[in-house]
Image (cartoon, rainbow over all chains, first blue to last red; front, side, top):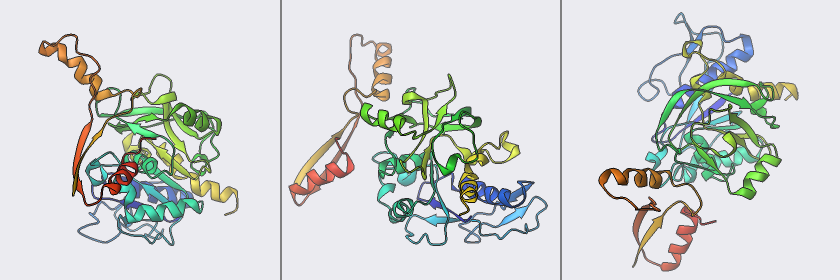
Length: 263
Length: 64
């Protein structure tokens, strides 16, 4: 599985997302092990990061498991999964995600999603997908008005989504909460529809709703299930060093789902 | 050219967290009894054609 990670001016989690995609695809081949990405800066060095093992040598796996997709690119051919990462695309001017939705790359992502390709929007990426109309609802300023950044727990829903292929319904996972505009909102009729369709992929675990999201919603899918928006950050939870690798369960989902259907 | 000033606020009924925070802080400034504080933003712009304005607003700040 080859991943594309969008990069807007103002994105800031795209490096971790690349890392997560690379680790997830290698994990499919031969276990997570101690594989880690080179930390070289993409902009000043190689156009794409390379995968290295912990000893500094190149891992046996092909290096191009994941690449950055600049916001002006429109060609997503050859990619099997897309991540719209967190950050502050276009400075969050007007409204978080409101300008990014009109970027050339997002037009291509909409087509990719319409063809059934798996798309994951994290944090700001979730906001971008909502603004684009690829996902229902909107994300408002946290009830506290404060930026939060801390570990937290989610429970997986039973959505029919490739992103949940590595998780059991009700399974509890630990991944970081890190946002200021994470309060999920949808008008009553839309909320009912989302719930009835089983589109709630993740909820904040009991008592852990950090932002006032309706129905403790942390992540929703589109009706088809291939597009997931998630406010907490699975890409920061793929290395034992960060205290939890639960994020990998989400990143591995599409490959597991494709394997299960023989795709 | 037509000048316009677009006022953007959370719809009625949606918790305006910033408005609440400001409202909660007003007593500390010595203002009691001030209610219903709402915070939004204003965008000023000029357009050649006023029919553009409605389309623009509907696209960028849908009221649905």
